[in-house]
Length: 165
Image 1 (cartoon, rainbow, N blue to C red):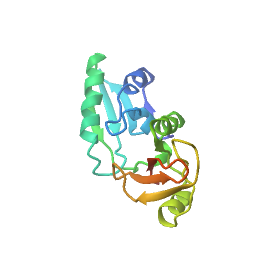
Image 2: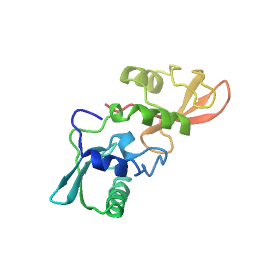
Image 3: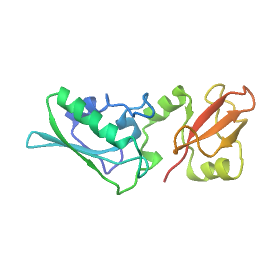
Image 4: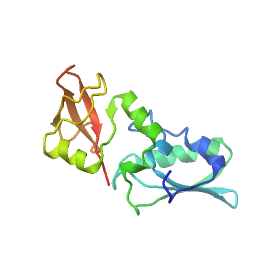
């Protein structure tokens, strides 16, 4: 969690069950999109920040949060918060591991990210064999926040989650 998050501890187990619709192995908590979740006058107020403005998954995430909270006996109000902007730093260590296990390379630090996306450096680790003998195939993968890579050792393609700061 970042220092700006305010999450009522009672709500964490509920919110951890809500998956990111584009990467279902990640919870919205692991993605860091939940900025706050507090109970005020018996209503859960949840603030969420999209991974990028215009992210099409936010409506689904909001609906999924409402459903999960309703199932747990809570009424809810969801608010989209754009500032501060989401950053890949908000992905938890557990979320980074889940990305890798799912076949998506976790984001590198900003300078390394630029090296691989703009300068052709081989720093992204293959999610299949672990080699860094990988190359950029396309700046855009299955979603705008990912790039397509291929490993020159095992020949397998995989996505890389771009660094956003």
